[in-house]
Every structure is written in structure tokens, then in C-alpha cells.
Length: 122
Image (cartoon, rainbow, N blue to C red):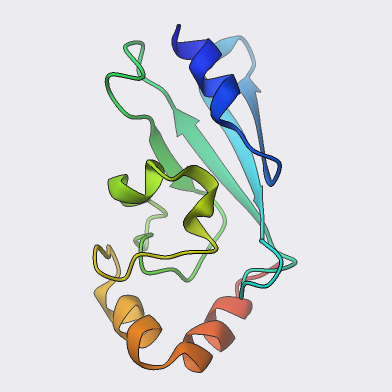
């Protein structure tokens, strides 16, 4: 059941696949959405799904650096954002940040936030 659900939840701007034979450890790629400061970027992640997924959430970590209020310095993604999958890059939630200083810039100086974010785009 867990593996079927994982496959179903991927969308067009995301791709993912298992690492070797371990179906619960995946590498993923998110393309920076058009019209966002991440446009043109390619972001790599690791996804570790527990055997009792979807009853427990996967652990998702960016391995590519990203400037985002819902991602901490270690690349960990805020759990609330995981529920909305790949919309993370288009629609940050500055009210539930892992990076409070980034969230503040997002709220008060969107152009500055966009410039800083664009520096991380590969």
C-alpha cells in the first residue's frame, strides 16, 4: 500500500526513484516552477519512507542548497509543507518557518527574498 501511494503522489515537476533495491529510500528531483524565484533550478532531495507510510510521513531532505523559509540549513523540510508536496517552491508558508530570518525577509521584502533565492538556482 505504501509504495502505491508514493507513486501516485508524484507530480509533473517532480521525479523520484528508489536507490538500488531499497524501495523506502528514494532520490528525487524538483524542477523550479515557472514564475517563481526558483524557476530554472534543479533541486535534489532524499526521501526516506517508513514501512508504515502513509500513517507516518516520509523524511524528506534537500541535498541541494535552497533559500526557503520552510527548509532549514540542513535541508530538512517543514512537515506542514510535505503535505502539499511539490507546491513547496511556489508557495512558501512563512507562518510555519524552519528558517525564521528567511520567513521575515519573505514577508517584508519579497524582491530581496527573490534575489537571494535566485542565487541558489542551478
